[in-house]
Image (cartoon, rainbow, N blue to C red; front, side, top):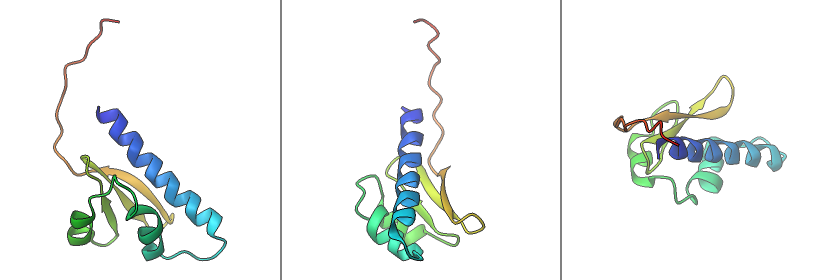
Length: 92
């Protein structure tokens, strides 16, 4: 389960990057929020608004989120929820 949630975060990060590339103009962080993050059903909007901080963070409904890296002007996943270890199943 955890791997899939990280992949969701990366896909949302890629959607933000693709939006910026396709825009053809300088894109503000607010525009990315309005056009990419807020419409996504993955985003915990209330938590993002209350805890977003600086640099900006987007909290997902999963234990993951995205944090803006100003030096690269991109969004990378981070973990904000508890870590739960699941037993490793080595049987095929």
